[in-house]
Image 1 (tube, rainbow, N blue to C red):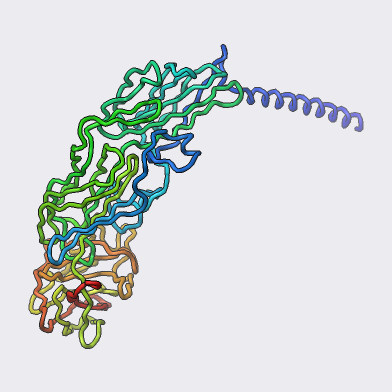
Image 2: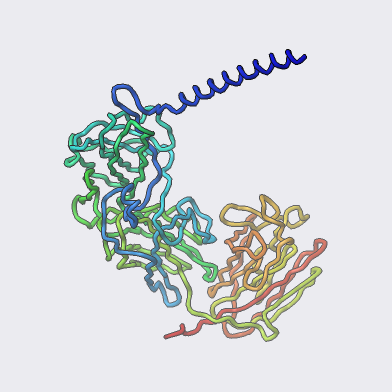
Length: 516
């Protein structure tokens, strides 16, 4: 028995030695630098790390990003204003785009939606966008080049001799179809890309290709032209919509630019009087928020940028030749230009009995509401699950407003305007399961100074308000709110099991703005 055990132990020992030798052998094979090839050549892997704005602030970024420099003429937020009518003002805010994809503005828009204040950050180059990498030797002579596509891996990358330092240059025009050619590319000093009329991104950096370790080139492209996304915003404190935008343009600008690949220096073609058109989506019958496509601007650093609208139609008012001047714009920077429309300075006025109202169990109740010359607001904090208001003899809508489906004799007729979402579906709670507070209602009814009616709603308790719309053939009536006399409001509801309506009501009276 002992002999048998001894024999097994020796066999196990031999097996262990063989396994150890095999593992060691595998480890040595795995440690071989596969990027090094025969004849003193090596593969250089191209690693696109992203895109950043042109103006750099750190030495690390300068080693990686496009070397072109420009005097930075703006940091932070700029504001300007323009009067459209006696009681309508446009406030323009120009701010650099941040590292966050979207700021929480409460506005549901496309991917070109607004973003907040800025830092030096990286963006992701969209999949399918093409970029070109050129290689020059230590004497500035052309060696090779290759085109790459963002989001696609390349097995070949670049093959170069080891023991030498090269200058790598990359550029892209954010296109998925074509790249402009390089003029006089045989020497780095003379190489340039000319007549670029849209976007332009650039990178240049030296790197030694070695036989030791991996050769990885991290490319951080840098924007060379500025870009502005413009948004026209009508807030919940102003009744009305954006109904017309006449030929919006931005100056100054050149038709195109050339970039020297050695140092990233830009030269501009023609005069700086090429007005770039700002493209907005179709407005239909009107929108509360209109967001433009990004507008690319080709120019040097300026402090006298101008955006001009041939006309703007907002909240029933049309104003021609609306201009915002003295915008400070830096090449390579991304900006959001938010133009917010505001009414006059007002103060809230309340009924003698206070601002609260309530009806329960289907009762019809009459309230005396105060005179107000700039409209009235009903903030509904609890509702189950329909209501109608009769104001000075006129119904608020052509049919009682119903927020729930499946109620016999009264079909749902109100929804969110942005995506047609309704309560009780796709993550939005039933309206009777939501509860608001003063200032953060579930539903807001706004009657404008000219009798226009708008409604806003939330997707959660005390959440942000979004524009609502009526459907199923129901429309709002025009309401005459008395500016000098008491207003009679009769609130009613159809009874469907538990029924109630609670909230706050307040008017708005125009006052002289503080400081005037």
